[in-house]
Length: 189
Image (tube, rainbow, N blue to C red; front, side, top):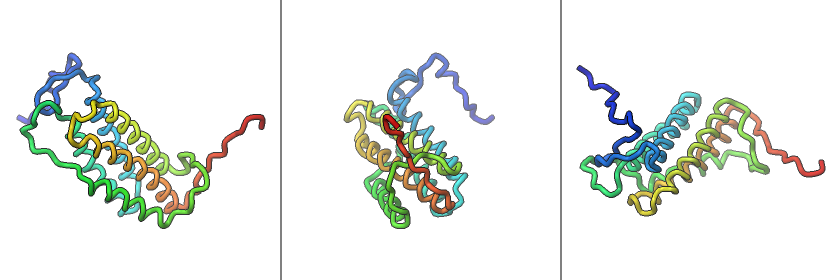
């Protein structure tokens, strides 16, 4: 018989962290890794929509890193995990920066703020960018020093939201979709 997906252990609003500690499903740590999981799903949709193979490959790499971040956030920082977990490292942040630099070399100079839209993939990448910012805010609310990788996670999520912005511009350029400049309405106009 296959293992069932439902355990019924969370029916009263609690769940277990890696390490066995039970916490409320409203716990900040659950909110943080749940938001990272949501982000990963949005990036999966972006990957399905993008036709550029290099971008698809990059998004797949990012999805792997988000699973790494989620597993780190799912651990009880007060207990040593017996599980061997994947790691996030400085090279992951640097890789995002190099990818942004690569895209920036081909993009026109940005002369105003840009409104999300113009093509479904551009819009979806902006949604993923916003979820990345929310995931970052969720991680900021965790207790400082709860995990060795907290600062690295914050840096990665910060850089990832920038990367997704750049990828939205880059994808729009590849699709020959004009960027939509924000034209603020000034008072008394």
